[in-house]
Image 1: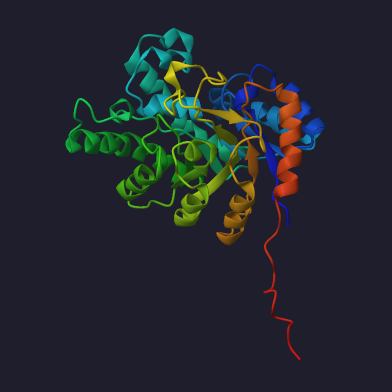
Image 2: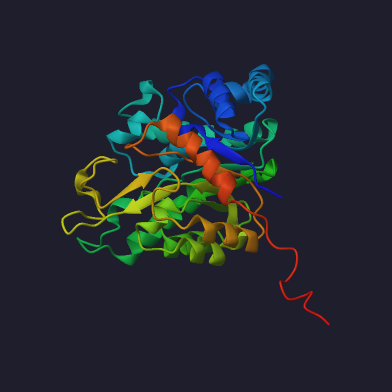
Length: 329
C-alpha cells in the first residue's frame, strides 16, 4: 500500500491547467489537488456547465492524473474574514473595496463548491474559513472572552449553511489549520470542532509546516485529532532563530533569510516526516499526500520534482504483524 502523491496547484496558477497537468505528470505525481482560482477550476463555470467539467477531467486523464480534492483557500478566506484591502486580491476585481459584496460572493461560491467536487469525483474540499478575530490573537489591548466567543459564533453562523450544502453531496470540508484562520493552533482547533458539535462534515487539512514554528508537535496534533484528518499537506518549514530573528517575521516577506522561520522544500526543513507517516498509519489515513510546494530560495520545478521523490521514498505501509509473533518454539 502506498498513498497517492498529489500536487496542490495553488502556487502554480501562473500556468494554465493544461500546463500544470503536463508538468505534474512529467515530475511523477499521481494527481492534483486542484486550486479553484486562476485557470485551474472556475467554480461558476463548473457549477453550470457539464462540458466544462468534462474538459477538466479530460485533461487529467490525458496526463494520467487523478483528483481527490479541490482547494478553495482564497474563496473561503473571504467568507469569514474581517475585511481589509488584502481581501481584494482574492475576489473578482469589480468587487474591490466592497466588503459586503466580497463576502456575499464568497458565500455563494462556497455553496456551489460541493456539487462541483462531486462531479469532479472528489470526496473532500480543502480550504480556509477566515476569521473575524485573528487580528486580536495578541491580547493587547486586552481582548475580552466575549469578543473571542463572538468570533467563533460568527464563523458558526456563516459556515453552517455552507456545510449543510456539503452534506447534501456527501462531501467533507477540511480546514487547513493556519495562521489567519479561526483555528490556527491546537486549542483553537479543539474549540472550533467543539463549537460545531464535532459535526462530521468539518475536519482538518493537516499541514505540519504551520504547526512546527508555533512550537506544536505535528505528531501529537495528528494523534489527538486523528478522526478529523480528512486530507494531508506535505509541506516543510525551518525554524532558524539567530538571536535577532523573530517567529513573528518582522514584516519581512517569506523567503527573507532574516526571518526566524521559512517554508522549505520537503526534506530541507525541520519537520520529521517519518513520524508523521507512522502517525498516519496509526490513525489509518490512506488518502493522498498532497505536496504544497513553497520555498522562495529554490527553483520550483527542481523543488517540486525533488519533493515527489521525497514523499514516495518516505511513505511506507504499516506492519501487518507484530515482530515477535513468530518467535515460538
